[in-house]
Length: 171
Length: 204
Image 1 (spheres, rainbow over the protein chains, first blue to last red):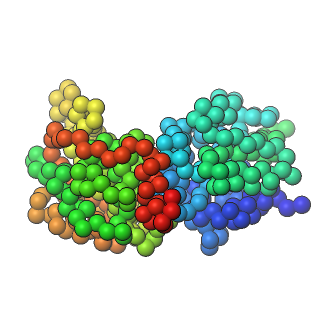
Image 2 (cartoon, rainbow over the protein chains, first blue to last red):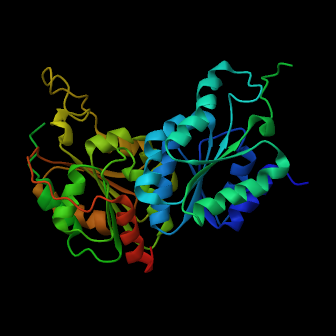
């Protein structure tokens, strides 16, 4: 079976994603590198996750599809600008690697990790959640369809159970 | 530093004179929105009514998606201060079709003309800022073609640079504080987006 991050890359290609926004993230690193190496995709590193929302709006104004890759700790940074997805009503897709979730070691990750689904829901973002590698491809594909065919703002929560627990060398 | 003498409305009118289908304009919330609208509302204008700090990034996403069109971002110092990191993100992409013009009156105009950080330091208890130079910030972020415009005699070159010079171009224009009439475009964001895409692609 292929690596789930490679599955996501395949889905992004299937859906003709042209711009990928990210803040460096361990969970997404393999996917980010695949995007950086692709000639079909423009990959932008952001100074803060909130830049990803207006970038996606601008890309859509110009006829291109995009995706924002971020960690749950970055979700809070996007919330005000997430309102753009409602005011402009444009398709928006974000893939979120969860921290402060299943077996998290770092207490500082819990507040935003646990708040992530609630604040996204409060801003009207449709949530998909996946915690097993076998379901990643179908889930991200469904999310992309909801976004780019259904015109929705959609977030896929890639749960910590899927990503693995960061231990900082502790057992 | 001498007082600003440039007036924003005639300047924006010159920036947008003869705008055709090759010019895509994004304006930041508040005064810049009213400025481009007074110059003449058009489908390929995207005037923002909110999303403070987001204007430059919206222009960048658009510039990358439409590399053969000119993208002009017009915004104010308050909006630019809230999204300074986006200048580094622009620099990382070096879009050759993007120009950013910041109309700097050193005030938060929509909330009662309070001093922004671009106001001088030691300017009294309510009028002091930090003397922040946004053109230096842009340069420091990696947008090497960054200049300050203060005089009427520089406006013709400003217009040329904003409309056609190889980007990314950043121009900080020091403008007067003025009380101006509100000239408002449609407010519905979905409508503004749809008419923009309709004009570009023939479908929303």
